[in-house]
Amino acid sequence: MHIADLAAVMQLAGRIHPGLPEDEAVFAERLELFPKGCRVLVCGEGIAGYALAHPIHYPHPPSLDTLVGAIPPDADAFYIHDVAIAPEARGRGHAEAVVAALLEIADGFPRACLVSVYGTAAFWQRFGFVATDGEVSAEKLAGYGDDARFMVRLTQD
Figure (tube, rainbow, N blue to C red):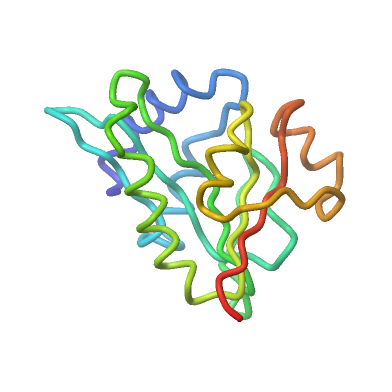
């Protein structure tokens, strides 16, 4: 992902997550702080998907639509903030490919974690993520929607 991609990423985010809006500043900050966790999927002449991920202190994912300020130097988890694929580009293995790439980065941390939304927990379970009820406050999860589930995957023994 590059700064020039943000307008297209924001347009796609609005299509995919109309009930979970985030300001462009959130995307720009993540790109600045941890560029290797920010990816785009280019199909044809446009962006058909994106991913945002970065290190955090476990189990403290950022609230939705919140700037993080900095990546903690002693981060102990890799947080997958979002993997979004346009409906017309789904079913071609793009999500699996980007998740695999993100999990390679996550191997440098004891665990990877995420907030599953829109009933996608079964998708994430295919990659070894399990729901960890109670590790994140209900108030924080509520900002991600009624069906939000905090999930974790151990990456190191």
